[in-house]
Image (cartoon, rainbow, N blue to C red; front, side, top):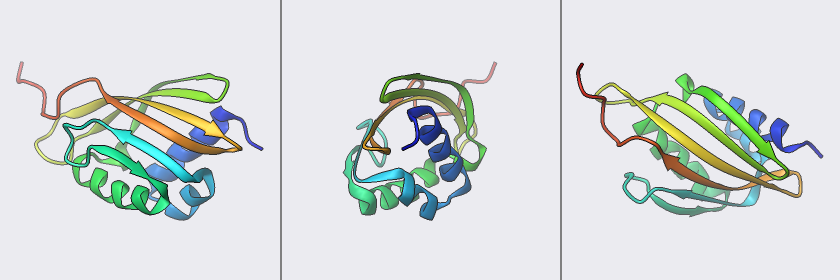
Length: 124
């Protein structure tokens, strides 16, 4: 059984590479992901099939391959990752905080919090 930090790090590595096979080994079959309602793919997504569909929709909004970590904090079975990722259309980037819960050696749940609006930054 891997620890929380290792699992979450492996998950981000697989996600940025678009490696759905690796994600299938890391994520729980009962995965629950809650995305903010204001997003085009907002709401609660359950199970690996819904996650795969969600992953495809997320890729239309943010460039997962260019995701950058600002930090990862782990406490027991919880991990909090702060990331920055470019928006696909219109430039700018999303600043996101994600809460991940590990259960029985797999990533089992996530809550996603956008720290900025879904729009490019204002010109300076």
